[in-house]
Every structure is written in structure tokens, then in C-alpha cells.
Amino acid sequence: MSNIAIQGATTGTGVFTLESPATNTDRTLVLPDEAGTVLTSASDLTGVTGVPNPLTSGTAVASTSGTAIDFTGIPSWAKRITMVFKGVSTNGSAVVGFRIGDGAFISTGYVGVVNRAQTAQTNAGLAYSTSFAIINATAAGVSQNGTAVLTHMGSNVWNFSAIAAREDNVSIYTCSGTLTLAGVLDRVRLTTANGTDTFDAGSINIMYE
Image (cartoon, rainbow, N blue to C red; front, side, top):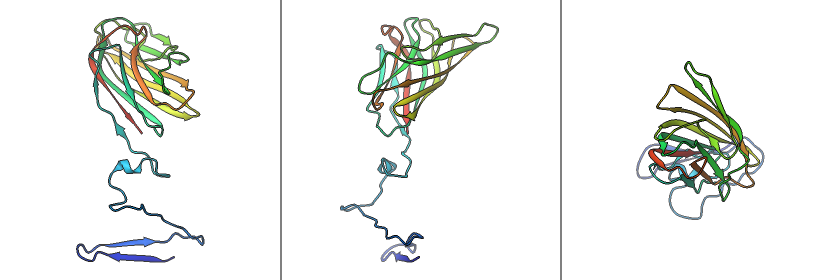
């Protein structure tokens, strides 16, 4: 094993050391053909083999109008996507849920269930079909809070899990589901089951890594 030590010529007293690997095979390190530093920020690590992609946060969007809140342009390297929502409500009674897509949003084939646990009342559930619902029932003006996570299993298979709550009763909602896309996921949408109820309060954001 051999080392090369380089000490700053004008400023600083630290020594930068290059150490060869413990191998009998020659290795080549190719530097970029440009001036400047090799790495300038965490974003420079994106796509580098053997280095985890950084956690990237989107910009929070107010869920105060429209029938859908979309996040598009999700990079192909994203393997986990977290959605956080606060005070989200609509003007109707259709349940709110997430849809994902690979160039277009998918509205069929969702498998799974959301289950409600409520003090002194019978538990209730809702099977998935057109989206990953975050609660099983709602009403106009009811605020919903929670965190949902999409996790990539490989082969364009995405698993969904979430914990949510309604502000108008003592309930907790646990969610689990899955959907297989035909292509690479690049978008997430928050919408309602009927597609016509309008959002009127709250905000939502996503993070991916």
C-alpha cells in the first residue's frame, strides 16, 4: 500500500492524503474535465454508484382549491416518497386518497385497506380500488392530518402505508396497500374518490429519497 500526501502551499496546515486500496489490481480514478471542486452540494451525489441519494423536500402546496393536488417530476431514482398533510378538507363527503402514475395518473388496480379505530364505537374499514384512501369516511369541512409513505419494492411495485386522523372525532386510521405500475413512477396526486369535491383548507408536501 502506498500513500501520497499533499500539503497546502499557501494556506492551512492540514495534509490531504491519497491512499491506494489493498488490492493487486490497478485502479483508475477519473476526475471531471472541468475547473472547480469535485462536489459542491448534496445534490451532486445524485446517481453516484454506492452513494445514497439525498433526501429532497418539495414545496408545501395549499390544498385550498381545485379537485386535485399534484406533485410531478419525481426523479426515477426515488425509492421512498413521504407525503405529509395538515388540515386537509373538502366541500363534500367523498373520501380523500392518493393516486400515483408513470406518465399519467392511474385510477384502477389499487389493492389494500384503510381501517378506523375509534373510542367506544365499532371499527370500520374501506377496501382500496381507485386510490390509496387515507380515511374510510368523511364529511364537508372535516380536517384530516397525517403522514403517508410510498416504498418501492422493485419491478415498479409500490407499497403504501399511512397514519391519519380526523380532527372532528377521536379516531385513528391505519392504511396499507400496493399497486404495480407499468413504468417508472414520476407523479403523486391527492384527490377525492368522486373527483369533483373541491379542496377548501390545509396544505400538503412531499419528500423523496
